[in-house]
Image (cartoon, rainbow, N blue to C red; front, side, top):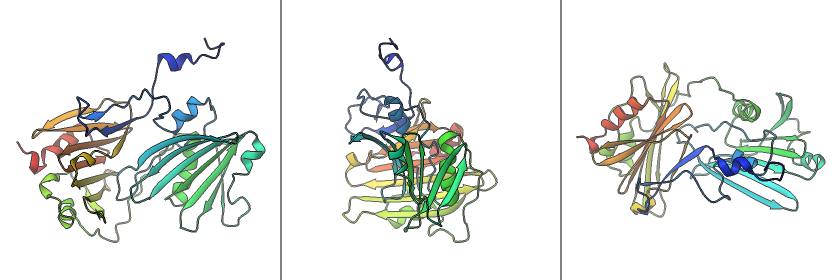
Length: 327
């Protein structure tokens, strides 16, 4: 089969990083959309797209950081072909545009790939050597960075919300799994709201839908609230850190005027099965994404979630502390 060009492994097995998305149409028995897609044009991540096109070079970063004060950015993957160049894009962006993007281009020659390098001769470009490759890390006018490199006929690019140290971490994660050392966030400026309940009250979300208990040691670092200019959507979130335990936690609550719009968020997860936990007539979905746990739920107009390096038991205790679902 292999000798005849038949994709044997593609026919008998499938594996990928997963995603969790609520289904608000009522067509799914479990209340959320499946993570296995039959449409071959859908790719769970950029690496899956490279695999589908037979690209064997390591070109996609494997690091997907949480932006301070935010939940994990959404993930969108696309593949386009034009003038003999295949463009693979893995986009990680929040609703406000912050985030980062990975791009890989398959050119017809190594010379054409070299033309994609950015800032090669600029004095403010950091030339970063790692694992036998050269990465050009160029600052952008917006205060962000762009990373470019080439391998044969392939060119890679990462750009978006990052500082120089983050850029180096992105580069290292292309060829090696690289755990960046934990660094406590800047706590010199206190958050506008020191509890998620206060942040929710500021945008008119009922505080009874917020957890009243968190594991010991967490302190608030940064809060965020949002009210749509067009109405119909408000959001509140709070980012915590546990300096002693070297871990973080993000709480987020959203209110939607239209309940069918409440399930639009995508949650990144690995292939570990989702745990369903019933409380107060609502199903809470506990999922893994490597070392992190994410809990998500829907309750009419309310969409809630929290994420961090938690145990299943801690997740359940946090859920049990939400007044709206007390039993």
